Length: 164
Image (tube, rainbow, N blue to C red; front, side, top):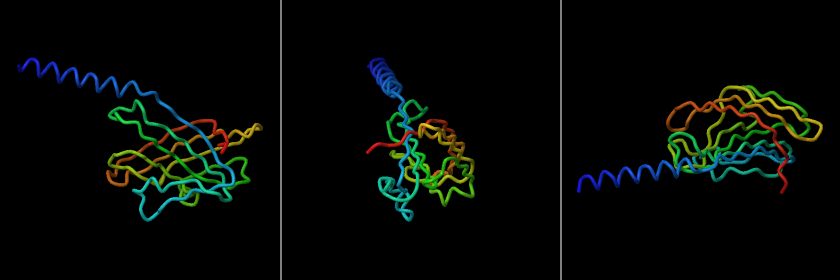
């Protein structure tokens, strides 16, 4: 009887591990012109209140499903979002600029640090090419709202305009 239980547990754990690893990693690099970031700053745990609405800025969003990260068996979207002036052709944002540019890290998961965390140090650089594609480098940090842990966010990508 004991051997059957042990075998069953091993089979279940193996199945759970395969399921978590079978999820395909996805990421999206997009920007919105004539937009701005909106969320409930008083309740950052309400990540579902985050949205991009009409405005006078360029809003950049890097979105991933977190698949394949160690210890993460769920597929939950994570965002890095920020905004710059609508007429910019290039930009460099440092920690001093993060608050005014609404630079945030969002975890849409059932996890300890779910919700919206502001970026608090690092650099974000971007330059628009002749085809309207933004080449952006993010090397920034956020502190977990509840855990106090540090999230080091490194992303490079070509951001294309989001078509509605």
